[in-house]
Amino acid sequence: GIPVLLIMAELSYRNLLEAFAELEHTIVPLEESSSGDAVHFQSADVHASVSDPDFGVGLVNALQLKRNTEYCQWEESRVTRTDSENRTYTEYHYTKTWRSHRIFSGAFDQPAAHHNPQRDPLPSKVFPAASAEAGVGSAGKVELSQKLVARLRARWRSVDWTLGALPKQYWWWPFEDKTRYEAITDLAGVEKSYAAKGHLFTYVGQGGYFFSPYHSSVSSSLFKYFGQYLEGSLFDWQLGDLMPSCTAGDIRVWYSVQDPSEISAIGGVSHTKDLSAGEPGSYRVGLYHTPKDHVVGVLHAGWHSPQHMMASEARRQWWWCMLARGALLVPSGFAGFATGETWRLDWRPAMLGFWSLLVAFIWLAVWGAQLFVLGPLALAAVAFAWWRAAAKGYVLPGKSS
Image 1 (cartoon, rainbow, N blue to C red):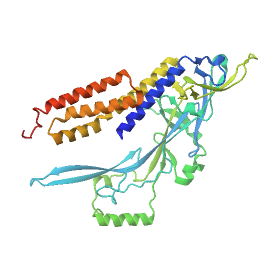
Image 2 (image 1 turned 180 degrees about the vertical axis):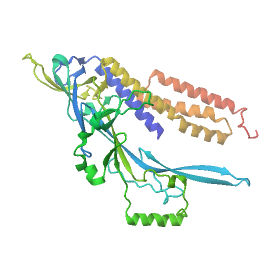
Image 3 (image 1 turned 120 degrees about the vertical axis):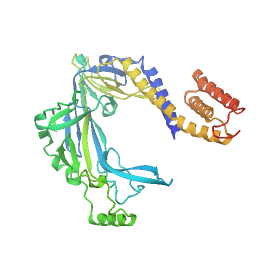
Image 4 (image 1 turned 180 degrees about the horizontal axis):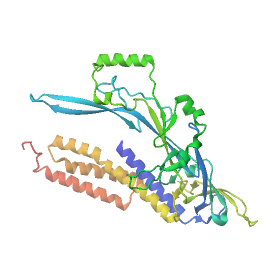
């Protein structure tokens, strides 16, 4: 549950800080490094290629390619109303839309009439460059490991294949178009791919989409009609049933890419060539293992110092901890409300007390006996003191004392 998520977030944050504390004073310049050293480098000369073998799609000068799969699915919404005779009834409405996840329709009010096929032959996936190189001045070429590339922090932008790789013109769109345009001739041969032959995917354009239609078998169609007959929805049509749109079970795929022109990296040198001959060397940089066996690998778009990169990673993980701490208010609120109902007291101090105690115990388990753990403990003491004081005179609204 949520407490487990908070424990995992706090552990990741602690391990990250410990790793950076070890790493901070051990980073050496790339030119002076030996195998096993921690290094930092920057480059504005990046060469890599990425591909999705299932579709036969490939791009050059890119570090990561993401396949984004979307599913045409029925969605159910419900509205509860009360008529003039004070009788309550529920109305169900259905619409078809594209979603990045599949929707289980078995729990719908009309599961047969609005069935969502669960086909998922080619789900979303990220493809890091298997071979990426960066030029680093006098140090020569640096080969980046695939595991380091997979940790890239960079903006994703969509990919579209058009005639002559010409950008589309949107006179009504006031913002800069970040789409990466490629020549549609680069898709030659995709009709022989596994996606095309095995699942009938074809390139339809309209924003860089590959489309696969859903074809229902005769037996499944008959079973669907029989289910509609049983549930009484065979002729119960809604606007969503009549409007032309995709068919539930259709799948479309579009791509996004990370292709920064500049990168900054922190990692470990796993292989070097001797520079004694005075010629530029060749390096392979991957993940770095600290003496305490923490694994560090940081790759950011842009030109950044190691201190800036480590601070950015720590800040990112800190925000994950803050979100998990906030989410912990949900189970604490349920516990506080249940306690308040049982004892006929205000639930708010109980919620605050439960939340503070949970945070304090988790911090003790993860961080040990640190001074900052006293904060939630003190807050818990104040909350339960407030709750005890409320017990002497507070009565929930609507309840007699």
